Structures are given as structure tokens and as C-alpha cells.
Length: 515
Image (cartoon, rainbow, N blue to C red; front, side, top):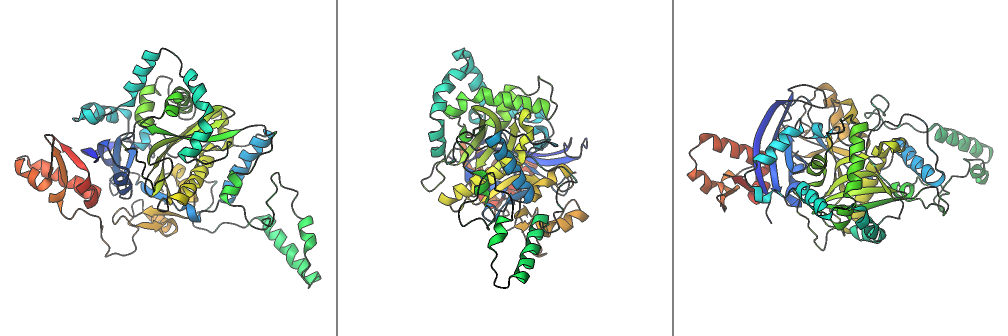
């Protein structure tokens, strides 16, 4: 099925949730009635991003807070010292029930939902109502509300039977993880993170061990250092595997450490398809929504009547992405999913993700505020990186983890740059540039062209607008034929702007609805 989109044009002068400017935000947007995963992959590689079924692209050289698409390279990723602390904190909690003391406040992958989209829910609600092609608008809210009215019963009864199958089902779906993982994605506090322009510091412990090693070598030229290990660190809570004690632990070693039988808690990650909703998704919908509601009220200070079922469904459950299950794709297929973190039989966090041909794309995270002490934001990001590596084992081209937008001018959003190695998307030529090369320029100017080649151009630009596909009066025709029926001079400017923003490939595959 082809993607069907309705271009809404440029929206300027509305509230920005990053810098709190009342009218500094500028973006272009379109309503996606349906969209293939390949089209969305190509769009996010040109700076677009979705919230629900609304797909938007900041106008980078005009908006108050330029939003640069950022991707991490999971195959080369090594957890930092602070990442390892978060993973060890989770393991200690699972094994012994220990709760670390300190500042537990977490940042989500995006700030409030309004910030992530277009300034306020009113805009999206209005666009949804005004969409001309209602047959394509498959709104989950009505479906759930009508189902609940018909049932007249709690979804918990259905959940009981579904949860019995959940672990086996999730392994099928591609989580393939032991029945005790969790996840989340916030950020280090401004001012407390490492200086991204400097190499990571060595641990003081490592420096002391190196000095000790050199001293022993001087005392014992034969190099017999057997005693060094006995004098080293006390035995770990989770002893390293044989022959690996001198190698740094991998991300998977830290996440999937085996737990003793008498562990205090059990953590499990379940991947459930959210669109179209799977039986597991429906069975856990109410419980998941209640976690979201508490998260919005406690973390983002929303009034109790704001995080409604309708809002939750519209922004975090509805998706234009078509579910696809090709034989060479991941076991769970492509499309939109919720990664549910189950602790001792209840949902404590949910990561909303899209699985696309080249990447796992993080959409949003919400969690039970009672578990803020587990740094679920950082933890979930690390779990999603590990999940991407796992999917890559079967689907080789799926090798990136997209974290949404990096906003250098907003301190609370700079934490995304700490998942290394990572790249930022050049806003003019749409090539990926290592973040280390971008930071000096961003320190000097909010808007930057990252491509070092001054002669480079956007290779994917719209070169032949007449081949752009238009859906008009239930017929599909190239723009070259469509424009012969048009007398409105403004129409051509709108269509050409759309073609320039989506690029030649998407303009030839997607159907631009016009009425």
C-alpha cells in the first residue's frame, strides 16, 4: 500500500517548549493517513519526525531552537562510566532490593508532548478534524472507547490469560531477552554531564592499578603478577565469566547478567505491537495508560483532566506506519511498538518505538514516578541500543538507533550527545556527520551546516517535480498532469515546497492528497 499524506504547509510563530518563546517556533507538517516504513525511514533521514500521525520538520534556519536529527551507532557503542552505574544500580535493585540515594529526577527522550509536536494539542486535534480524507484516519480512540462500552468489564480478565503466553510470545516478537529486563530513556542533569568535547576521564582506580602494576614489574622483572588479582577489587556481586576478568564488560554482559534464584525482584521487557493493536496491547492498554497519566501529572505537572485516554491514544498509540513482516526482516516485523517494562508483574515503564528498515527510532518514554530512583530514562535508552544490536543480528541493515532531535541550545536536551559514537544530520545536504565535528560550530551558532564540503548539495532533492504523485478525485496522477487542472497560483508553490522537503524518492512513491 502506498503512503497517503496531506501536506499542511508552514506554521510559524507558535510556542516553543524548549526555550519557552511564545512565538519562536517554525515548522512544516503533514498529516499521514498511512505510511510505509521505508518512506518514513527516508523522511527521518531528511529531518522529519512523527508524533502520532502528524509528521513535522522544523524550519532549521528560522526556528528559535534548531532540532538536529541524532542517531547513535550501536554496533560501536561502549557504555560510559555513568551508563554502567545506572545498569549496576538496576542489578543491585533486582538482586537485593537496594535503593540508591541521590537525585533521581529523570528527563524523557523528548520533553512534554506539546514540545515534541507543534506547540499544543489543539493544532493536532484541529488537523485531525480537518483532514479531508477521513477514510484513511483510523483513530484508535474510538475503537477502544467503543470496545470498553461493549465489554462493560475490566480488561484485566483478558490480560490474565494473555500474560501466561507473554514470555514465549515476546521472544517470538524479537525481544529475545531473559524474563527479567527493564528499560527507560532520560538524561543527565545540565552541568553534571561530561564535557562532550573532551575524551572520557580514566577512573582513579584504573590509574592506581596501573601504578601498582608498574611497581610490581620493577620489583619482579620476570613479570609474575599472580598476586595482583588477589589484592584487587573485592569479589563482584556478579562474578565475571572465566577468562574475561581483564576485559571490559559489554553492554549485554551488564544488562543480561544472570540473577540468583532468590533475587528480590523480577524484570521483564515485552515488545507489543501498538498499531494495529495486538491482543497483548489491548489487554494491557488500561494499565499502560494509568502509568502514562501518573507520569504526566507528577513529572510534567499536568492537571488530572489533561492526560486523557483520547490524548494518550492520539499521540502514543496511533501511528501511520503500516505493519510489515518481510522474511528477511526482524522477527517482530517493522512498524510501531510499545516496549513494556514489567517489574514483579506490573508495568513500570513503556518505551514507544518505531522499528524501521535501518533503525530503531525512539518516540517517547513514560514511567511510574515511584521508580524514578532507577534512572529509567538512561536505562531504557541503553536497553533500546542493545535491542537494536539484537535485531541487527538477523537484519544486517538495521544498525542505527535514532534518538529524535538533539537541541544544542537547550541544556536539558544535550544529554543525547553522550551516547557515543553518534552523528548529527546536516540540515542542508542531509549527510551524517560525527557529533564531535559538529559541537565546535554549535557552540558558536545555533544553526549550522555540518557538511565540511562547501560545494556539496542535497543529492536527494526534488529534481523533477512533474513526477511527484498526486491523489486527486480518487485518481492517482503525476503532478505534471495534475497542474493542468489547477488555476490557483498558490497551489503550485505549496506542492513544490512539499516536494523540496520530502525529496525526489518520497515524492514519487507517496501520494499527496489534494482536493
